Length: 126
Image 1 (cartoon, rainbow, N blue to C red):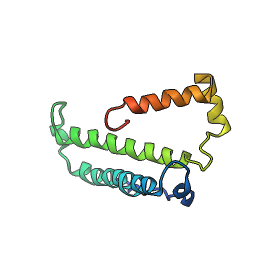
Image 2: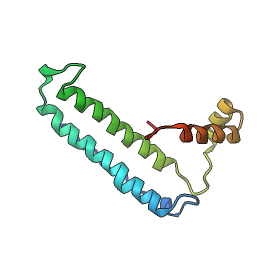
Image 3: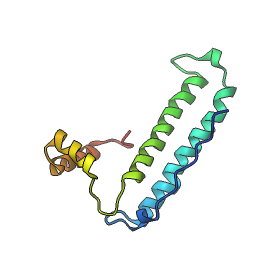
Image 4: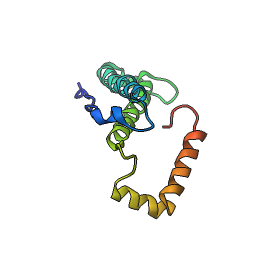
């Protein structure tokens, strides 16, 4: 059996951010993020029992489990990055700011692109 994932601890400072409510952070952490962690663990328990000889690209238990494992792991990773990068001042650290400036010429230009991408997305962003 695969090693169980454990959620990262939530930093208490996240509940005091400007512009993001305590309710939003709590729901993202307790419901969405922990839900993804739980699903990865659930899928990891089911994979060893699945019939690997029946795998095929149209429909098989392996295909569905691996597809949903990818989705759930992506949810875990993206939420961890989200929580680890939220800061009370709302600005990227120097190394990220340098990368943003190289790619978008300014933080303002990046912010504009980032917001437009979020608005244009359907459903989940990943």
